[in-house]
Image (cartoon, rainbow, N blue to C red; front, side):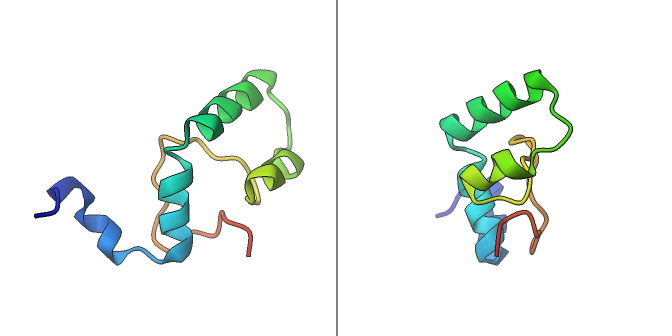
Amino acid sequence: MANAAYLYILFLDRPAIAWEHLRRNPDYCNDWLRFRARRRSSSSAHAQTWGLRFLREPRLRCPRGAAVLAA
């Protein structure tokens, strides 16, 4: 039986599932913290390292169909 806290994942599309995976990646979380500490104005170039359009706070869940992942 699936844990009720994770049942929402059954209804996610591919980009949202990818985000759920990435936001739990310790390397991404650490990279985001380092980037945030530097307070850069634009994250788009750095985000491409992760296949993203911009870096996003890893504690935030993405809404279904969110467009944060590169196409």
